[in-house]
Image (cartoon, rainbow, N blue to C red; front, side, top):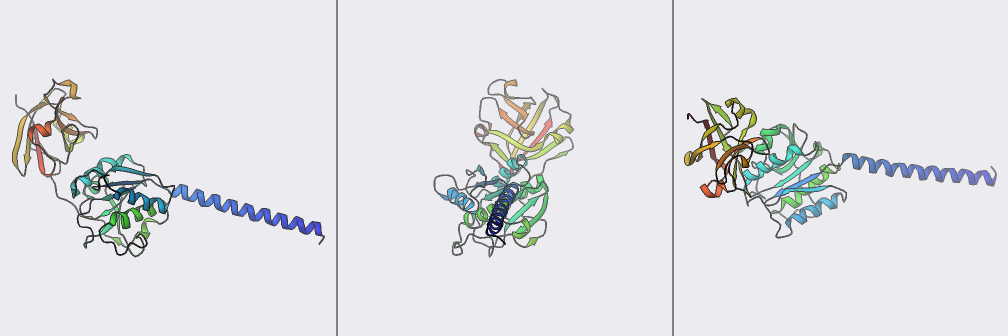
Length: 314
């Protein structure tokens, strides 16, 4: 072989090697981009210290390109019920494949399970199995549940930390799942398709009376949100302008009783007057126009709060 032919051969080999390396990097980048999903956090940590930042730092260390967002970090301390509601309020509006990390964990370090639940809608929820999944399990359904194997899916060097699983286990596992570093099946052992549920009043129509729960308040305005959806309310054949008789109870004890018209929006009644309307989730809600219903009448939310709604006879 001539010297010139040998040089050409080496040049071709170098070119092909370079092309192979380029295409390998391209396909690795493409795979990473295609497997990447949003990672969405919520907690009761607040933003006064570095806890939330630490969780996000762990996630970025897993994948610096990972899109990270928040629902809220202002859930009242230890309020598992509100954590459950906020997940259900936000999750349906996120794309399939989104990974949610929810950390309201008063039992941190105990024998409660750490799990990832996949909903029938294709969303993933990384959280302690302490009731946090109640509302999304009811709303979106349970497709599968895996317990997190902390021998594999735990931040390296955090083994002696027992009080910050949000950082050491949930943020780390959530980031690995969202970035495509692990598949759902690699989270850990598969469990039965059930999670811990907090009992509450399901919405129902009984003998012409609607019964429901007050899961949350529209915090900034004091509007009272119920779990009675439009489909159920429509069974009462309401017309705008109809007046409804309403009773709000705490642990089955009357707290407020009154009447309100069913209207489209707040401005359809006088300032300070009560109204019944569909909120942004198309659930029946109660408010005062230009006023705070919850504060004025001492109404709160949670599993012990319920509501009864019926057509007034007048």
